[in-house]
Amino acid sequence: MTDLQGKHIVLGVCAGIAAYKAPMIVRALTARGAEVQVVLSANAHQFVTPTALQAVSGNPVRQDLWDTQAEAAMGHIELARWADHVLIAPATANAIARLAHGLADDLLTTLVLATQAPIAVAPAMNLAMYRHPSTQNNLTTLLGYGYRVIGPDEGEQACGDEGPGRMCEPEVLAEHLVENAQAPSQHLAGFALLITTGPTREAIDPVRYISNHSSGLQGLSIAEAARDHGAHVTLVAGPGVAGCHPDITRIDVTCARDMQSAVTQHVANADIFIGVAAVADYRPTHQQEQKIKRHENTQITTALELTENPDIIAGVAKIVPGPLTIGFAAETNNTLENARAKRLRKGLDAIVVNDVTDTSIGFNSPNNAATLIYGGGEVVFPKQSKQQLARSLIGQILEIFASRLADINPETVTK
Image (cartoon, rainbow, N blue to C red; front, side, top):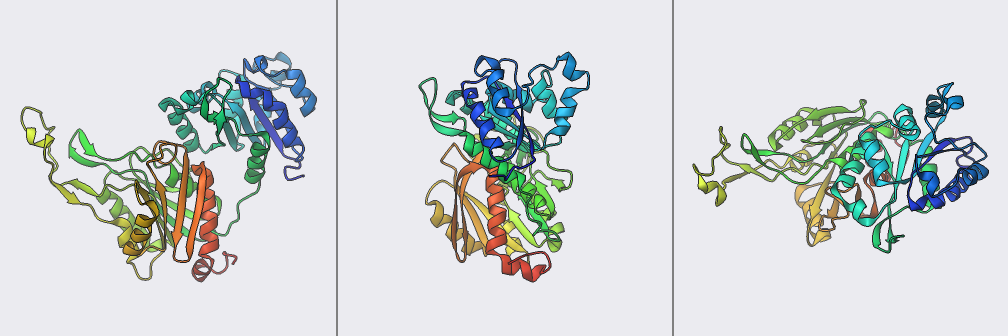
């Protein structure tokens, strides 16, 4: 196997029990032709020795930002420039937190901030640490920065607990890097893609609003994947959505009517429309100009008059001729049946549905699992990172709707 032939990979190893697998990760990468430079965090040597890692990589292990000989030539900058890919495995809860907050207090974190190479992290920690909201928020932040999050797997852990938190196996990590090393096709070059993502906020008064748990990460990941395939992407983002690549045209909105206005303004130029946003179905009929006081109006606690918001994606689907239109649905019961009916009712070319009763995916999670439903069948995407699902979804769109896209731009789509 030489699918990483000539690639320079920095392997960052953090201080967790899974570090004992680091030599096997090095072996898996070098077997595919990569040259590997290992960088240890401050305490990783407690779990795996630099001697073992040097033996399998063929390169001296770096672990000290204050290495006089290496830093005489600004070694951390040279490493950052040398890297084609950076893989941090295992990535502990502490390392993930430090990376999410942009710390640069050791060689590994300094290198990460300085590199332009793609960065992947493989979380490995106790399941309670992994599930903690701060860890989940930090992973979401890293995904927003464009990092890839690989895993974790589920199973028995060193502490005796069983659940999510095991680092993915070395071969799996190597295969993820192989996939990332392959440049995406440019089959969407020349296409304009309009996508909505995130929640909307419907004001009750100046301090209260109706909203939902959407982070916008799935839509953001799809926007990034489409950009990688050459599309010109316009992203309409609700409140709280993380930053995106500067090549993406971004429009920030707050409420459903703002989102509808932005979509209406740009949809005429769109070849593909993907409605990922979790748009509030209803808004308060009367928004109060001043904060409602408890003692002034107790009616707010028992009755709130609502007005239905515009159905943005159904409106897009009615445009003739209109863009290829793909919707998203978050369901809590009868998942597939509800999504199939919604696709037909709204006149969508396809719909992507997930079951949000599974708290390990969807809202407030870096992972997702979904089913793509279209006129000719259904495609199931098993649990994976939202970035991976985004890439898989773009690939399926290119395959399923190849003829439709070729009619729009025959020079760029290969059937």
